[in-house]
Image (cartoon, rainbow, N blue to C red; front, side, top):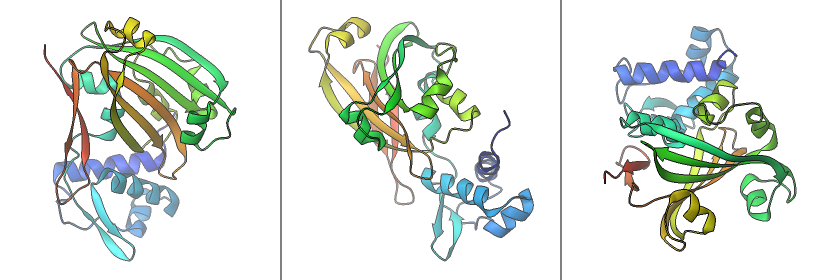
Length: 248
């Protein structure tokens, strides 16, 4: 499947910014200029610019020309979203074992997170994630039904789900993260090799497209002896959430 036009436009702008062709403070080509360059309508151009604004790479708008705010993200969102990409980028070997994938009714919590009616059909996955063969994280992920169905015929242990969904044109470029601690339940204990009640780092995430429609809700639980989180920010850009590997 061909990459959607708005993603190609966004990728080209990221390349220009990362290479210095568009430096920090430089104006970004206008919507009309980008439309002419890509022989495109305004809609995909606006989607591309919205994605870069969400990433903090460009700013402006509301009557003011968009300008480059930062050359690159400290942690690209797609890398944070994808455990596989993050672990491989750190020089480690990611692993995954899909324990369950099922179409089922949404619970009240999931329905609230995804803006659905309670009982609406969703697709849920339970996956154990590992680094260098060591159990590291347990992933409980729920997708809205049209997106989740794209995974029913996909080998979820073959690589990144998010790379596959992106290749299918699914936009997950905006997310809200909530980090807290939770006691390991019996499932966590068994699959992460920790005692019941042991503290785990939990990241709850709701991912949406640039149109604001929720796509995914996830409850990811990490062993704190192997992974930590940090926040990196500056006056020029919104905070970036980073995931750190703990060598032990």
